Length: 594
Ligand code: NDP
Image (cartoon, rainbow, N blue to C red; front, side, top):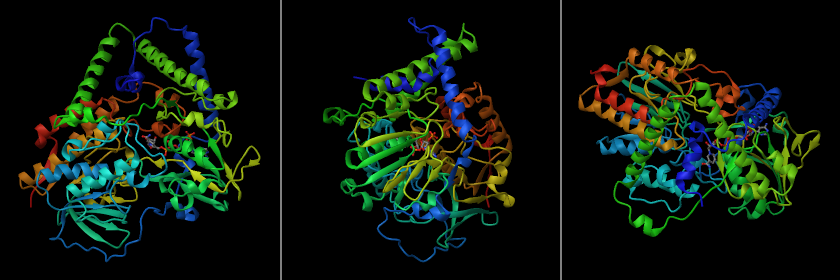
């Protein structure tokens, strides 16, 4: 059986420059790389690089954005805060970012915390994504935040959506976050009020809220998107996006799908979890694939009582510390391995290791899928980690079911939808239900929300020349504003590792302001410039992004400014930078007091 350590190794293969003794000849790898390039070029030949290939759930498709989970649309009077009646900290978004940062703020004695959230409850991703089979394939003991504080041990190695959503609600209850929370409300603008040293927050409910500090906690993949497809508005059947699952139509246990013909567009991580459930219940399922996902083994198990009973207080923090020290050791090993070999040689070895991993994924498909043509079509031809890897044990076998059909568009994608269903290669596939598994916009800071800082400067305008932050969290000219989960922060496969580190830092920054009797904190231009250069220095060392098939990991194949991405110096280095900054706040920030 694969152990957790093996699985972690799969994620780090990308950086593995060790050399196998029994390596096939280099020509073998070169041929595969040439096929990767062919597949990318084929895809780019159909659609240009960039995100213009996607659109929002608006206009004629606006109905798809409706929240199917809220019992009611709660009517309420607008909230109008006066200048001397303001909350301390306001979170835009009520997902993990807001919850784990609020917990830290409460520990530091912050009383008034308001979450403003579009959904009808906290939970963010886990509020919206309730499709059948929803689960997280990051190990639950690491992924669920605040397990020590909540004295909770997840029930499975990979937690399922409902358990994670319930955990979010439990955090909100424990830390009294429901008291001031405002749901079914979207922030439309956040404007700095210099005179009163606070933020004015306007919402789509006519609210004018005021807050001393604002945290953009709106999530990294929060806004559902649709592919731009001709004729989609004329489809006469039922349709929804994966993050707006219509259980009224499907039945709670999909029991209403027995006579339903389904089309699903997209084969990313959401679709991979959904399709086996559809295969089991629907009359027929047509899966419209543009690029296959890589599907690895998913080793899941129920948490053993004996194991849980042995956990000592602080066990999750200890696990996290161990993971960070493992990252440190890997970084050291990388340095050692590099000595004595050229940069080109190191990249060649890494790529060969990654190709080995992808060929193992291919073999799993051949071993599982009966029909050779379907098996061939399900094989991903790109380097490991070009796209988000998926883990599932039922996805591939589902294609052996007689009612499940793969429509492989070979990089082209669905370009047209008729009244009866998707059209490809001149065939209109007649379906009763069309599911858009087409993903989410990647966070633009302040998604849905216009942020205006000192001197009336719009954050989007400031970023016109490239993103400028310290740690991805602070941006000069926007005092008392903190950004979570956005660019210029360290990328972590387990996102909550990053969010916890950022949340702790934000809580420490706010505490610093309060303890010293300051009104505002703003990053200096020098500190911001230093971080921008740090981000640039650690990016673009290989051609990797350009060589990958398009996806949200590489900005859909578009060239981007070197500073407009993640900080790639490593998670331990990111943590060290935060520690250094917190040890000497005065040299990085300007503080004012009334
Ligand atoms: P993704 O963006 O990953 O997938 C969108 C899918 O739609 C892709 O397969 C894309 O193809 C396809 N697509 C877009 N346009 C067309 C078209 N015109 N015709 C055919 N196919 C099209 O979104 P997901 O919701 O699947 O996942 C988003 C992220 O959420 C994941 O990457 C992951 O980070 C997270 N997640 C994690 C899960 C987990 O822990 N297991 C589960 C679910 C989500 P192409 O690849 O060619 O662009």
